[in-house]
Length: 279
Image (cartoon, rainbow, N blue to C red):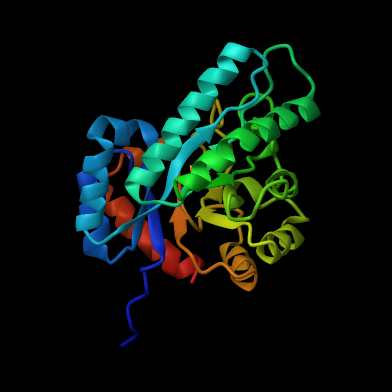
């Protein structure tokens, strides 16, 4: 009889089983032998940051990441100041939760703007202010490149190479990058960029979701369960491992069909798919 799969490095992002409350998610993961959870700011704020930290800690789990900070690209000074304040609060929340990883989504183009380079430079300017503050709290900023279909409205950083170009302006312990299979599976340079990230000690988070078609209206909720689409998860796992990643493997799936199912069934399926398609 084969040994059960080791799920200690597996982390379930809160959005993967959105229908569950935070206590339900924590209890389910702890019971299944899953080692961590990835959290989002809004539901954590609603539950209470300190209470959430205590809940996860007492269950013997770790918070593998907090989503999200960022949205740095506005030109308006008042909006930029508000974004800076929001991101400082996000750093404080990450520190209180005991996670060293705050995931950043950079922000899209302001209305009427077509200057991608200028928008990325505003991201760099914001990082220059935020990174030292985060470092003083023991939190590392993790730049997440998003698929190019989000470049206009959500994230002007579309490739791992672009994320590294930004991160490498700052000390490695202050700013790293996220490898998310959903956003990067299509890029034929991603292998060498993962190696570059590993060599520079920039790997900060490894997230999984599958690419399935057709994309839904709005495209945000089109992520697939592991094994349902086009992503070669074993290849990604081998690449980040070769680059030195030994941290959590976080499954982050936004999918309305999954949210309509019973949470325990989604959790069990996710663990099974992780064992089958990643390990």
